[in-house]
Amino acid sequence: MKIKFKLLSLVTLSTALLFSSANAGTVDGVSLIINKEPITLYDVFKYSNRFNISKKEALDILVRQKLEDSEIKKQNISVDVFEVDQYIENLAISNKMNQYDFLAMIQSKNIEIAEYKEDVKSKIKREKLYKKIVSTKMQQLGESELQAYYNENAGEFSQAASFDVTVYTSPSQEALVAIQNNPMSVASNVELKDTTIEATKVDPKLAFMLNATPNGKFSSIVRSDPNFVMFFIKNKNDVKSVAFADAKNYIYAKLAEGKEQKAIEEFFEKLKSSANIQVIRAP
Image (cartoon, rainbow, N blue to C red; front, side, top):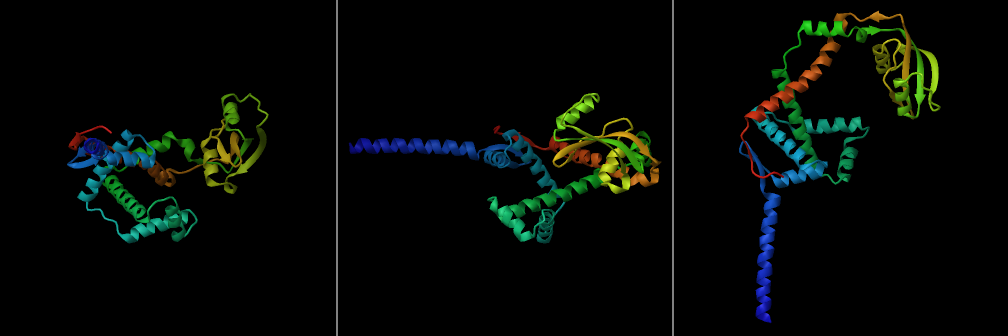
């Protein structure tokens, strides 16, 4: 019985070792090599679990990160401890907290502070990289392009002193959408009120929205806790056009925002297409 037991133990041990080795290969094996830098199956598994995304999405993000890291190194982009602390301080302030309480909150979510600071450091490096890409790759917007946008969107650059409106208020956003689609419809949970709104006495964002909405049309639906609100523009009073010279900075910022993102995406698509990528095993 002893001999049989020992033989059985050896067989069981061998099987366990084989299983363990095969399992390790599944977890720790290389999924992809990009420019001689490996991304393991475990890297993909960990990132997928951490951010609750598919393994394919995780792999795509990790490939992008490898390209970014390579470019950061190539351009000698660095971040010091003071920049990290300032970034965290600004985050804390935006959350109406001091830095100590903010980091305690991060730690309460089972995130190591050292790991969190490394993530912040990487984020700042990437932001610096994006700024460099934009500054070198984005073509400057010409005067003619700004002027064309101004001419084609004249309504966006007129300001009224006041607005005669009907205010529609409801706890149901769907009820307001139904009225937008069929203005003659009636809903019991929608309250109507005719009023005049003075531009200088409301939030600039609301004034901008009302200015951008043509006479005889409904505005977008906005949240006004606990209800939803939209405005029907009956008339705009004392309308004055904003001169092109005064609108240029706004137009530039608006058009540049889209161009910046496009410049960044095009830059990394070009890097990816020229990269040496070897797919070893799909996750």
